[in-house]
Length: 255
Length: 317
Ligand SMILES: Nc1ncnc2c1ncn2[C@@H]1O[C@H](COP(=O)(O)OP(=O)(O)O)[C@@H](O)[C@H]1O
Ligand SMILES: [Mg+2]
Image (cartoon, rainbow over all chains, first blue to last red; front, side, top):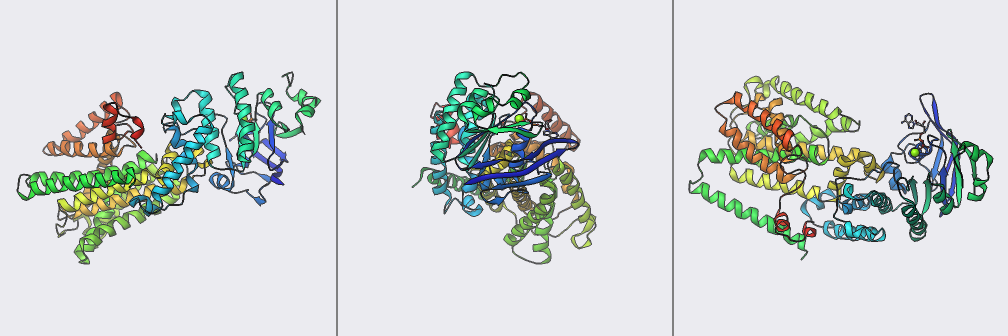
């Protein structure tokens, strides 16, 4: 079943066509990579999918409905969560609170129940705390739940950002360069984790990555973007041997 | 019973005890008129400081016209008792509603824009409210609205203050409050986590404005008269000082700063020109030595003291 489908998606910044004629089609449960040289338009594509930018042309269908024109929070509530290329945590808050906020829109208690602390307030808060800790356990961060997010080591901040995105309970997870700044060992662990969360949470994942070993190792299908356009798509094997891709990376080794 | 629910009841009990002690001391005249005046002012300033902190400290929006909402509460409240002869509680609620509705009306268009539109809008708003009042003869114009019954007393102020603090504390420690804080922390990430940032900015701003209205109604009914000159930009600046001094994002910080500044202000009552000098020096000193305010974004609580004694930090839920 197709979960995400874009057709002729594009955006102009002034005279610059950052993304044009982008046709993505991703089925439920797939793990797809989006690669391309710096400035190719990968992050912009994510921003279009999540409502941060409004496309100047084209359509986006998610789970059967058009999501063009929705605000980012509405897109998230429909079931697309993301991480950012340059980590965006709630940096002065505890690790636990970071995850709790992602769970926010599932909470049902109203303002009155909040203020008088009756009705659903305590039961839901307890459930929320329990769930948030479960998420942290999965990511091996439960021991640090009371630490301030910005004090975590870099690799753990990346992990927390993924945990937080998952706590929003998405159907589609978008990861923007999750391995950026990680050493090979951390990258390897991340690969394992991405595989595992996809299975565990029944997720569909679209990931942008610079680290070729990660993309080639973990993705089943890859789109290659250059100057805002898809220049190749296929399995990692096909991409590796595609002359256009090799050319786009201009000597950057694709392996 | 839940530990946390028990803790709520315990703090309410402590408040009742504090009320009983102070009320007793007032009854037997140990606390005289002068101190009652200052206690009333402290309560009003706590309401103003904590409600402004919800907007500026917790939600990260920069409002600099809080005195305007206080003015609306004061005038709407006074009209209820003086002109319409309604009970005091109606005056307080009407003051809150008037200020809250105005806050909503100002917040909705300005807070959906990103950037510092709110600061500019609230700065202008405070002055517009003041000048509007000056030109309405029904409420006394420039000479002020007179003949307001003194209905505010220690009891009203105390319970209004406790109500405000608990309301805002409970709000902050909920999913709604965390949504507000996430806006302050990182608006883009908050949206990406499904938080309707405009809604929560407007919500915080409206609640903050409504409580400023409560403070205004209490203020009007203590001094027999309300006057547009009581709600100038200088008053908004005083309130901003309370929030910044106590720490953006600390309720107990705002309470402490409100108490401190009310005393400073009382001590300097005879030298009005010195007051601004001292306030300014204090703020400069603060920026140099403790830019995060006295408490930063931390709260003082029993658990905090436990931690100082080496207790488990995890109790600080
Ligand atoms: N908000 C913006 N305004 C103008 N240009 C932008 C904006 N966002 C991205 N761009 C441009 O679009 C192109 C693609 O950027 P981006 O999507 O970040 O590339 P990458 O593939 O490295 O993630 C770049 O040339 C960038 O400068
Ligand atoms: Mg990018």
